Amino acid sequence: MQPFEYSRVPDREAALNALSAGKGSKLVAGGTNLLDLMKEHVETPRRLVDINDVPMAAIEATAGGVRIGALSRMSDTAANDLIRAKYPALSQALLLSASPQLRNMASMGGNLMQRTRCPYFRDITFTACNKREPGSGCSAIPGENRMHAILGTSDSCIATHPSDFAVALAAFDGVIQVQGPKGARDIEAVDFHLLPGTTPHREHELGPDEIITAIVVPAAAHTERSHYLKVRDRASYEFALTSAAVGLELSGATIRSARVALGGVGTKPWRSREAESVLTGRNVSEATFREAAEAALRGSRPQRQNGFKVELAKRTIVRALQMVSGGVA
Image 1 (cartoon, rainbow, N blue to C red):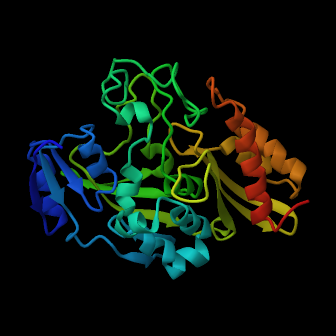
Image 2: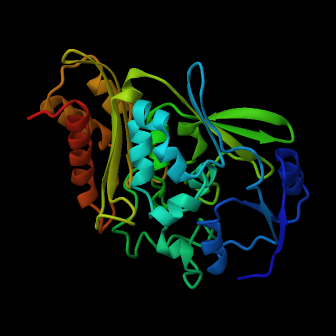
C-alpha cells in the first residue's frame, strides 16, 4: 500500500474543503472497498479523509417516501422497520450483499461508489484494463468472462457492476442527493452510474469535489409489494450471476404498474423499462412474466463464457415476479 495522509473531519463543509484542496484526497467511511483497492495498488490516494463524524446516518420518513443518510450502515438500513415494511426489496438486496461483518461497516453511500470486481481491473499485473488505465484495452473480452456483463457492454469494457442495493434503487426511482462547492443537487439513480462506452474509467456522475449526502426513495404501491432475488454460485458472500429487483402494483389480477431492474448482467444497475411496459395493464400470468423477461434481455450481448446468463436472467425475472405476485403456476 502506498503511504498516505489521514485526517478526520467533523462536518460536510470540512469534507468538501478537503476534497477541493486538490491533494489527491479520497473520502473513507467503512472503507470496505477502498482499502482493498489501496492494498492492491489500484487506488493510490495521497490522503484519506474520514467522514464518520459527519452527521449523515439518519433514516427518516418523508412526506413522499424515505430518506436514507449516506453514512447509514448497510446492516442498519436493512434492519430498519420502515425499510422492511415499505421497501422490502431494498432490505433484501442489502441482506444478500457481502457478509454480516462487511454490512456492519459499509456505508450506503460507499455501497453506491464501490468499483467492479472484474479480476483484470483489480490485478495490476494485467496491463490491459481500460477502466484502470484508459486506452490500454480490455483483457476480459478475450479472457475469462463468465462473470461479466451481457447488457450495456462496449468494445472497451464488459465489467459488471457489483452492487445489489443499486439495482433495487434503480428499480424504484431512487434519487441520490449530493453536495459540492456549487451547492446541492439530485441525481436520478438510473442516471448516476454510466455506461462504459469508450470511457469506462468514468463510472458515475459524482463530481470529484462532491459528496453523497443521502438517498431518497419515493413511496409507491410497487415498492411495498417488491422482492429482490439473487442467483449466485454459492449461498453467501458471493456476487450475483443474475439478480432481479421487481415490484408490482396490482388491482385484482391486473398489473397497474411494474418495476424491473437487473443485476449481475449489466455494466451498470440495469432498469428494464421494456419489461415494465410489457407488464403494465396485463393480467398476472407466467406467460406475461416470460414475455417481460424476453423483452428485458432482447438487447443482450453475451461473451464466449457467459451466454448462460441470458436464459438465467430471464428465469430470475420470472421467478421474482411470481414471488411478488403471490406465486403463479
